[in-house]
Each structure stands twice: as C-alpha cells, then as structure tokens.
Length: 355
Ligand code: PLP
Ligand code: COI
Image 1 (cartoon, rainbow, N blue to C red):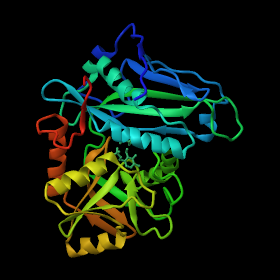
Image 2 (cartoon, protein in one colour):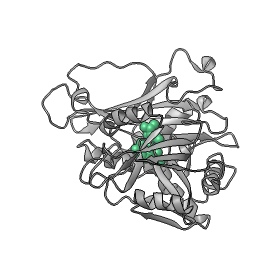
Image 3 (cartoon, rainbow, N blue to C red):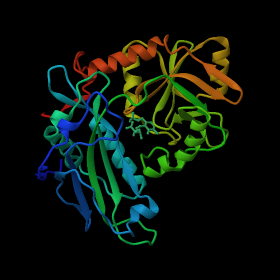
Image 4 (cartoon, rainbow, N blue to C red):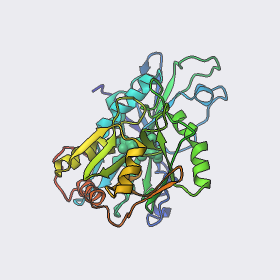
C-alpha cells in the first residue's frame, strides 16, 4: 500500500447534537468532516481530512462540461460489541479503479481509499447509527479539475470521501416498470462503470416511470429489449422454480454489484441453487403465469435487499406477495447478522475501522 500521512483539521463546531437520528432521510445529512486529495503532475498528494464545507471551482471545470466523474457507495455498520466495521471496501476500491480506467482517470491508491475512509470513520465514530437498518453511508468520489473546455482527459483530479448517516432507502416493497423504450447501457459502453453520466441519463426515464406510479425502472438489454439487466440503483434477483437467478455480467452492461456478489455467495452457502445467466422477461412472465416465479428483489448498498411486489411489462402486471418471500427474508437476515456481528464473519467481509 502506498503510504502517506493524513493531516486532520478538526471542525470548530459539530452538527451531531442537532441531528435527529430517528429521522434520517437518505443522503441529505453529512457529518462534520470530509477527506480530500489532489492529483496533479502525474501523482497523488497526501489525503487530508478537513471540516465539511462547500468547495469552489472555476466555471471551466472539466467535470462540469464532460462528466469525468466516478463514485462508490459503501456502508459502515455499528457492531453489537460497540465497534464499527465497513462492508467489503476492498471490492469497492477495485470497482472504483475499474471505473477510473474506463473514464481515463488515474487509479486511486489503496492508502487514500481504505486508510482515508477508516480515519474519517474513526473521527466520525459517534455519527455511526445504531438502529436496525441504519448505517453510515460512505461516498468516495473522483472528478476532473482541469480548467479547460477542450475535450480531453483532465490532467488534474480531486478524490474525496463524504459520510452520510442513513436509514432505509425504500420503506415499502417496490413497484417496478420494465423499460422498453429507453436504454441504460450497451456492450462496449460504460454500463459497468459507476460513473455520473449513467445516473444522469437514467433520470428522465425514471421520472416518466415515477409519474406512472412506479418506484424504479428495470432496464432491459439495448438490442432486443428482452433480457433483464438491473434497476436504477440496484441489481435484481428472482426466485424461479426454486432457484435463485440473477443476470450475468459478461456483457459489461450492468454494475458488478458488491451486494449482488455477496448474495450469490451467501445464497450458495445457505444451500440454494444460484444461477447467473441471461434472463428474458418472457421467461419471468411465463414463470409468473405458471406460479413458479415466487420472489423478486433488488440488491445494493443503499437499498440492501428490497423486495419487489410488482413488475409492469407491457400490459402484464406481475404481482408478487412480498409478505411471503422466504429467500429474500433469509438473505436479508443473514446479511444483517453479519453486518452487526451477531453472526460470525465466515466470509471475512467486515473490515473494522480500528483495525
Ligand atoms: N446497480 C446500480 C446501477 C447501482 O447504482 C448500484 C448501487 O451501487 C447497484 C447496482 C448495486 O451495487 P452495490 O451492491 O455494489 O452497491
Ligand atoms: C449505492 O447503493 O451505493 C448507490 O450508489 C445507489 C444510489 C444511491 C446511486
């Protein structure tokens, strides 16, 4: 690991005592400090922890114009023994640097990402929520900081980490719109990268779906609009004929979700048959009609495991009973037990902030 030092400048006042931990809207409240590092002249400077505050940039900032911007989403949890642990941050580091590569951005060193996050979390330890389904959401991100409007990879970047204590992302089972017109990603594109533009491009179709009463879009493949991909902020799983199935990653069009891969491993360890493969919407509709499609759920850092009770495809409404989804329940419980330390960390996924 590239070593360095992390200088800490503490905030003069804290917002902690005025934060209502019984009412945490997702991603709207931030802790007292943030981490920041600058890349220039071909190298990263040391990260610094400073008081959380606005930052200002020149109007010509490359990110504003061409969107060279990537991010990650990670959670840290309060364990039953009072310590705090981060869920699989090394996986996020790997994915972050894959996104960076695709967007012609420099790799971020492990020290900046992992040690930076740990130090920030240690400083903000009192902010880590304790309630069930609550966590500290960690948002590392990197963006281009050249001041020039020619189209080219930037020579300068900022890497930052901010923290947001959060409660559940969704409070009820989801009603999903199967998208047939708009497309999220195509092979050769940037679907597998966690880059800002993927989210920007999803907002208009998501707004239309919301206006029709849906919570999220289920994206389909770009060519035939036939094969299931993922939702706006989560990967998807189905239970069909008793097997747990999820779209495979080969096409590079969906995000290689850390929750997704954890659920695949966990479900197998619980004795389930798991298939990662192409899934057509016709297969799901046929399974629904036969009664063999019994569960659907989304999986992601922000959403954890979120049950899907409705899927609208053309004129067919797939209606599933969210109160009877034993696989989703079992996985959700097993994940929660791992995250708060009430079950042993047999996979070695939890990284203590003080380790
Ligand atoms: N797919 C998309 C588009 C996402 O934004 C997310 C959230 O990060 C996921 C899937 C799930 O990925 P992960 O489990 O790594 O959070
Ligand atoms: C996450 O789950 O971490 C995400 O990034 C999804 C969303 C909040 C953009």
